[in-house]
Length: 173
Image (tube, rainbow, N blue to C red; front, top):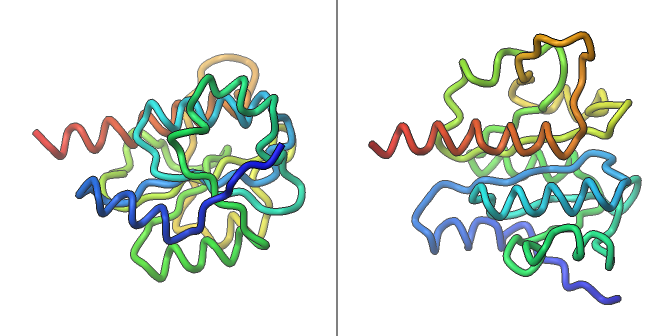
């Protein structure tokens, strides 16, 4: 299956066309195509302009990803880069605030996520890699009350996306 990947600039062009700040999700080591597809679907519903993946240690867009995404792969730009850390540096140079979703961070609901934002979602079990985490402007966590201290990557991504969406809605009122 040949999937046409986008370029990083396509994310900015799409946001500009919608007259809103860019919003991206960066996948750091998501190897499960079911999680990737679910994340794409949440991204489409939550207004994400593009998903950034690396060439290594991540599921490519394949038939499973497309099937699980339920059509979202047609609408969300997927950018495949050689190195996600270089992509993060480029995003930051263009005024995008980059946050890792990981344990031991600040409460995501206490953060103002309005404006140009990218959320980094790490692999299950491994989380966001150390170097990537250090490059981010901050680390955000989802509050939890249960005995298990982590969520499925696609669920964490969805909750992060909707925390950002909630900030945007509040700012627009």
